[in-house]
Length: 188
Length: 158
Image (cartoon, rainbow over all chains, first blue to last red; front, top):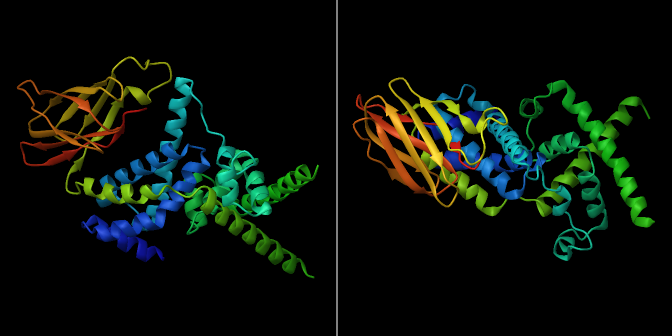
């Protein structure tokens, strides 16, 4: 979908077109989910912050400065809401993050294990969960379907756009190294 | 093999690895099915012609240690013709709100993502609402000059 298409959807939605709105929801839900889960919010909290982002977008539709950047606007809103959830948790002394590994299939979770039948997939996801948070966050966003532009990723994570490619490459190298560790561990 | 070939090969390998992660995430951590429908339903909350009030104070997001969870939360909004101060107290099961509006309004409603609560505003501009369901809240108003004013959503669980 081109920038023009996106900005056309925003314009139609500002004029009250629910179908255009739904097309935006369809396009960005997976990205927003990836952002929220990248901040390790639990699934319910992640769904919650995403709904807040859509509600805020409804408020801002007629005032959006760059309608073609609505994806970055939504993703940034989700990030801010995530940081607020985390800050509140900290203030209340509650658990700040759920263990992303709880979403992982292992021997104690037969249902999930069935979902990922392939040994390699299990090892890969386990290695992913063992990566530094910064890497997980970046890769998680890049994994979104459809993938966001580097421009949008940069804006969402407040990273220079030129650093996305090199950081992605380093994180994937790291992932390969961790995957080797996981595989070695499995063999021992 | 040239350096360029090595680089291209590396990029292809990276793309393939990322594609694997994307495929796995879709299996183990897909968005909940209801998320898209609730996001779609958000559109019905649009009041596109309203003035959007500014959030000028919220004791829940001010500095750490300034407020305990037992104290009521004070939230203030400002728009061109009106300001509104609200105090929210009680937990999720018995949440209540009292407020005062400065400026002339002909209608005022407290809204959550679950329900809308029209309220009476007395001569001093005071109003109240009880047993609010939902975790997000905003106020919608009509001013005596005929203008619609909506506050931003605030999250009550934070």
